Length: 123
Image (cartoon, rainbow, N blue to C red; front, top):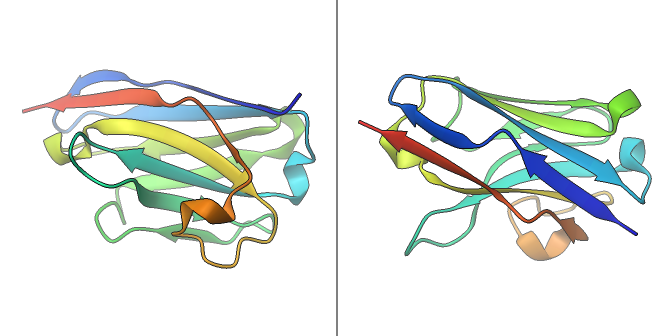
């Protein structure tokens, strides 16, 4: 059974940090691209960050310089380190995986999704 399980969400004040984890099972993790998406109430789901199987990272402009994506193949886990958090970062964060994702911002390119973890940033 394929599973992606996110953890690490929570409530922090503006300027704080959180590290999200996404632990995968049931598929070949080290051959997969991983993405972190988020969806705030009333907004569309948007790509926050993406990392290819070879380690090339992408960041949305809104998080560039504040968020860092990484992966540990031995632990089959992807991470999203989030620093200098802002209230506008408040959202439900999802991890997703796919094979050789061609258009990283399109959710349909990803095969598997986690259930999401809530991040709330207060001012």
